[in-house]
Length: 156
Image (tube, rainbow, N blue to C red):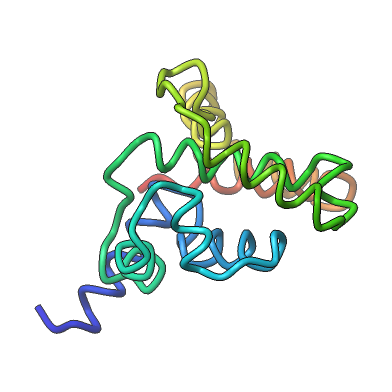
C-alpha cells in the first residue's frame, strides 16, 4: 500500500477509535500548554518520534494505554480554571502532575464514547426511517440531538 493511502487509512482509524485524528488532539495540547511537541511527548511518556508518527498518521494508534490516559488527563486539565487562565505556573504544574502520574487504566477511568453507545441504543429502539424523521423534527430547536438521531439512522 502506498504511504499516502496508509496515512489516510490510519487517520480514518483514529477518527473511529479516538473521535478525531490524534494530530488534532495533540496540536490543541501543544497550543494550550504552550509547549513543544517533544516536551509534550515527555509528559505523556512516549518518545518524540513516536508521537510525531501518531500525529502524522504514519501510525494509527497509541499502543500504551497509560499514554492515552495521560493525554486524556491533559485534555481535562485544559478545562480547569487554573489552566484556562493561561498562567505559566498553572500550566507547568498541570504538566508536572500528569508527567508524574502512574495512571491505572481501567474501564472506570477512561471515557466511554457516549455518542456511540447512544447510537447503538437508539438503533435498537427505532428504525432508521423513524430516527431520520425524528431528526428532522428536532433540527430547529435541538440541532445536536437531531445530528445524533441522524447518525443513528445511518446504518453502516
